[in-house]
Length: 301
Image (cartoon, rainbow, N blue to C red; front, side):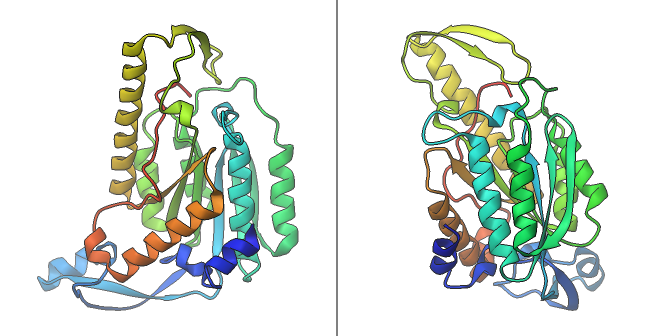
């Protein structure tokens, strides 16, 4: 899978990550094709004309994986579980980065911060990360997910400007938008959203019992009820819209990974969209990037 991805990127793995590990080189006047995210508003206000910051890239990237391992990721109705998708994504990206001389670290979260793996390089670091991920217990019950805890932990741990992946289904208590925005101001942040088709649309299969994976609360429903299925789908669309607004406001690009999708194909599509935005940033101003329309969950997490 890693060779396939690297081959399709034609060795240009940095297409996935532009804007990381940067040192300020100079300020210059804004040009039409510049990325508006690099406008220096303080200088712009003083000079009464837009100025952008130009950076030089560090040769080494430090990447962090913020991993949501709460019970809601132990769900999947198609090819795999969301947890397995998380492990595959982390493995591919960590190996892709370390094979080019970069370092990776991780923070595990499941109701609370469970483990912090300091950044390291090389194949052994990836093997350690994956070993610890696979060994992480599947919590049958946990406090309701609050991604603010994970993001605030990252703000405290990650000091040097880094590339940060947030991998989650983003089924969480509200309030995490503010620490997300702060994290995105300090680092290059990418979000990978884990989804399953049944979180978007319920099939007509009759009477079933649904259970909240974290609290254990159960709800008896009749999926023959067309009105209920429509309300469920509408809640999913509303959640999708709200998540899109949150990521766009924070300036965080989003890749959506489904349990029915092809991981490498989604990563390639995501890389091409980011490359296109880098070439013509003005047309993407203020918008996050998603590799496909992002489904959302109307179920509790």
